[in-house]
Length: 267
Image (cartoon, rainbow, N blue to C red; front, side):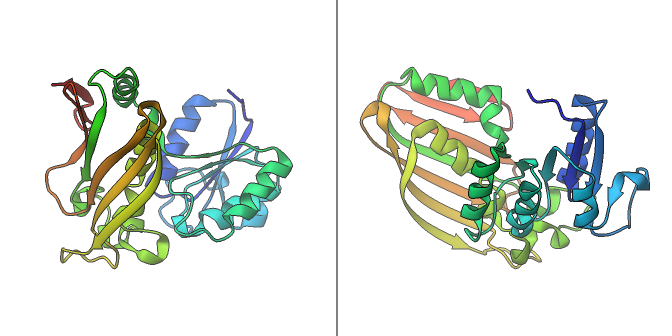
């Protein structure tokens, strides 16, 4: 992998803190700095922080980790791409399509690496699940049923959930974008999504201005089996039993991935 001597983390929320910890271990000799908008709640040396984008660019980072709210991802990524930084962008890449093509054009011109943080496809149990699908362990796939949900206030118990990105539409929150990992891995395993229908709701009395439940019917173009696969996907912020499952119903049996237990069952 590439070795970086200067790394910048844009944003210092829960994701930014996690990246700082991991990068410090991966690149112990690197100078890792943070771009933050406020000077409050700093628990590491102030010299590690920038509070203006111009100062952060002058630092000359080779890699920028974009962990700001989704509504700012493309804006921040574009500024650092122009400066020649490789980019890791937390998912989703944005909450809309505005200026994404511009970012891609800069990436192509400057020959940069850009990776969006859909990390579940690197999970060993999910890789095994995909491998069993590819090997047709349960034969032809008739349908797929996928669920992911957790009660939003329990996600980060030390934080006021109502002030989080997840709870605020203007920051790119809502269950559809927050749990978009499912959309990524489903297309990775079963093929490109070619049609969708959806029902997006706010059922609860949570202090949020976003959707808390999404019901999706998808069709994936599964090239290997020569026909489309129907997928039913439910996402929510309201269930108290933490759930992340994918069930593939096939002609020879059923394959079940449990992302909480990190297991795959063949029935």
